[in-house]
Length: 308
Image (cartoon, rainbow, N blue to C red; front, side, top):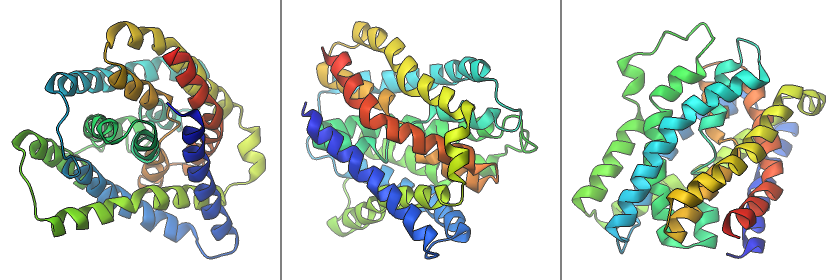
């Protein structure tokens, strides 16, 4: 694994975030764009990226590893809600933000940062494995994730079937069916889906940067809760999970992909969901900013420790 390639990918994404910040400061972007753009990503480009990750597969990897990744993904997004609940008790946030912090412990930047980094470091097979993780990610994010992020708020009990049947979860299930059946689509369809999905990483980082521009920088660096959360999320939690993953996962590529997923910073989805559900998006935006900045160091160091 080339650590310098990994660092380069992280820097690129962080610069795009800064680009969104600058555009907002110059009045080119505003809060209305942030809100509408968030809806576009959640309901349009991210579901397309999910489908594209399956359609792009040319040579299926070993079935045993595929099953292993499925099991790991299910276990990850079954246990992380419990771990996140416990860790949220550690930082003791206000009732109105407890759901946001809980959500951020669970849903990292698996797709937006994970896909390009894994492609640069490990190649297409790793991207396919990440696509499997992303299926379970989306199933959890668009189902119990909505309940968790609304925890402690006035909308805590507003979950309904209409919200469950979202573009994200429909496309997650569709992607799984495409993989299982092996169905193929005309190149024009695959290219169209890939193009739409490809918008997601840059657009999401621009929106996060634009959202950060609406926050007073003093608030970013004076929020003790965010700092404590970020240290636990980026340092303590991965270090605790490294020996567990090393013991249970035998395939080196599967292990590498799993650790990379666990080392990802707070996902863009946290900002998008807090904006979409009208919570305090500044908490999520500050957490994305700080954990992404930290990840320039914690991801390379974490992978060096994990692979030693």
